[in-house]
Length: 129
Ligand SMILES: CCCCCCCCCCCCCCCC(=O)SCCNC(=O)CCNC(=O)[C@H](O)C(C)(C)COP(=O)(O)OP(=O)(O)OC[C@H]1O[C@@H](n2cnc3c(N)ncnc32)[C@H](O)[C@@H]1OP(=O)(O)O
Image 1: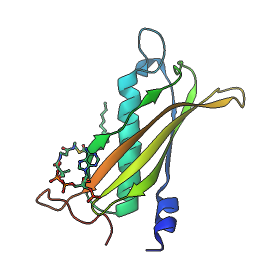
Image 2: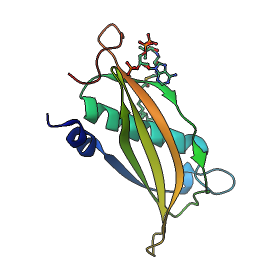
Image 3: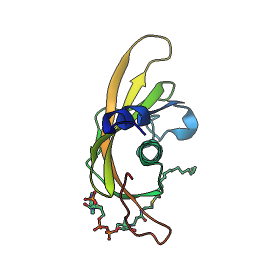
């Protein structure tokens, strides 16, 4: 099991994607709904790896789209547990954009997602045993 800090470190979750035209809008930048979908997915994986329990999304915090993400770039989503309650945990998700053919990398989107651990009757249970 390990300490709380070890669990948080171990559950940090990263996903890379290439931004292809199939995921972009009429401005040729990543569709916001696609970004939200990917953020919820990586946050869900992080919360699941942290708790190793069934979790559901209870809320999202403010999501800041600081820069548009053009087609033809790479993105990395990084999810990390930032707070732990009795039945819930909050996950910070950052999206970093990278150029394909240079080392340029910058933080472009950030937000938080909260999850609650639930039992088979969908009732909240402790997030950690
Ligand atoms: C195009 C290709 C498609 C491909 C496809 C791939 C899909 C790739 C996507 C993957 C993504 C996966 C994501 C899956 C996860 C869902 O999809 S879940 C679906 C959406 N979520 C739901 O339906 C949940 C609905 N809500 C509920 O069922 C109930 O509110 C819950 C969660 C069981 C909680 O019940 P409750 O009685 O309200 O709980 P209560 O005891 O009051 O509070 C429980 C905890 O929540 C906290 N809480 C309550 N309200 C809030 C709030 N507003 N904010 C923060 N914390 C709160 C409380 O403080 C408490 O925390 P602790 O202090 O114990 O730590």
